[in-house]
Image (cartoon, rainbow, N blue to C red):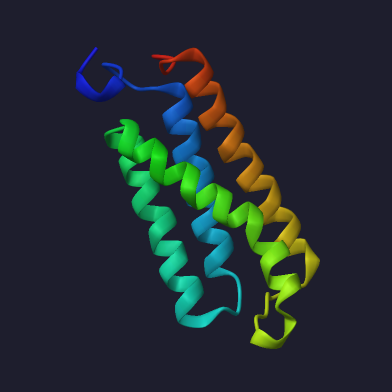
Length: 120
């Protein structure tokens, strides 16, 4: 196994998490969030590339931070309604974001619990 805990060969959990990150980027591209949504979508794509190509501790750590932020996002936005924060489509976007964040965190927790990734 290479340094940093990354497995040699395609890793099932990392690749699945990368697909989740791409879905998050697509979700942000579909919102009416402007520059902020674009920046977050680009962060999701960057995370996806690292999970796909170099799924080490830094890539997984970034994935967890972004997923926790996305999971907490609806609660923070609801607590600060005067910010002018708008999601296109209402609660369906928040539900999709919560599901994707949960899937991302589940994959990270599974990888942490195993102590390694599953090589395909």
